[in-house]
Length: 232
Image 1: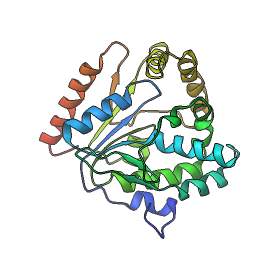
Image 2: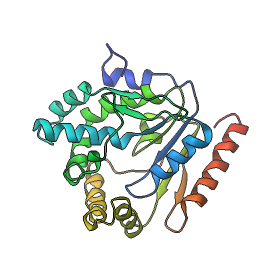
Image 3: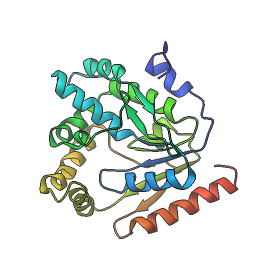
């Protein structure tokens, strides 16, 4: 976030100066796989905004902040330093370090939707996300194309059947059954707090029966087409 500006006044004011590819969708739809691949392909910074909310959830657990206390959570969010690393494809740094596997822990998974559902928290995070990604990025999350970057040149919304998404999450977590069950739990919580929905101009990709290579090929075509047209 730009220092000296409040989240509600600053996040929309940050001008977009580079190519932004926004990827939204529910847990397990394939956002991270596609986003990372597109970032490598087009040599853009890769930002997984879910990790930002997970970092806050982990901090709240460590500091014993009530997941229902939006004011305290927003204050804690402002104390976390989010930045981009160096390298050919810069990625998110949290307090100067790459996100650790602890952010995928079950206790974090159990509270992250509640933590992320507070408007005050989302205002802080959106300001940070806009600031980090405005010079060009591939950014994934729940409301990137609709709220954080409604002016993104390319917007994707990924979806898949719940059973398929749960299976993917289990494989990501080493076959742990609870990881798959957590997808249904997240869906139920997100439906009440921040349901993912496609932007009106988003390209919707149902990844239920598509492999990651097929999804990437289709997405690359869309991005290159948008570039040839000079953006949307």
